[in-house]
Length: 354
Image 1 (tube, helix red, strand yellow):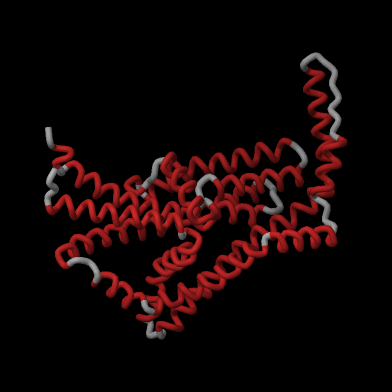
Image 2 (tube, rainbow, N blue to C red):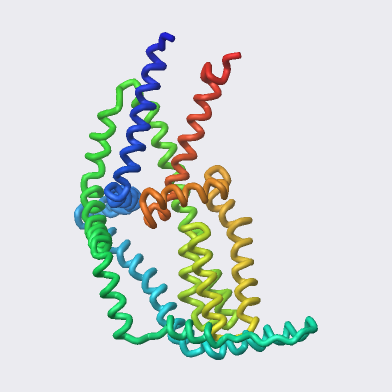
């Protein structure tokens, strides 16, 4: 069968796309810091442009934007550390009483059902106490052993932490020049269509990022206020962390929910903690799904939950935990690509031919 010139061109581009995907799967760990740096540079570019309009030199504005981002990330990490450092010592001290209360409740429920039972929690109590032991010497030996066996992975992580800010700095510094050079490689007759396509991608992604940030801040305030009204001592760090971590669907909310349940169990040692967390987090989920997300993000960039799970698994497999963070912004861009592909397919002979 003789292929037309247009079909040959499509096959060539399809082959190039497949080769690019294959290379990406092979070099996922190598490409990860560049992909992260490009994403950060894209997000910080408007801020650097605004600083430049305020007559701040571009190198200074770039450095300032990066420093502010690093400070925000360190502050978020400190929230997790503060919660864990407050709850783990309490958990170690209160494990015996928690297990005794659980044993008494289970025995009472068994007696209510008409049979006598006594649950032996001694072994579980011993195991949990040993696991949560705060012996500094033992922890140091475990950390040293882990570093010795996984030294290569630690070096890679530390290298990425140093490399990503450097790459981001140079990307922001030469952003306009890099975009101009990249666009000059596009065939002349495709430039207008590509310009419109990239403009649509930029609009969708910008709307998504701004809406997601608004959702995160509102939920952080809601969860912190709700837990504080319920009497939680760690309401502020747990609530703020839960709200900010909803950027990672399922995982962030689940981790925040677990921290709230743990803190409530240690503080109240009753079923009040369970009911309080269920009410606060249940209202938060309804608020997010039925009002905040449709209002601030819009249905036109909403992703189906099945697609969200697939994107999280796929990007996590290719790029690790950072890929999970980038999955939804990439999904918003893929949604634009899918729309254009669907329009092309419905107007092509492949769809119209009887």
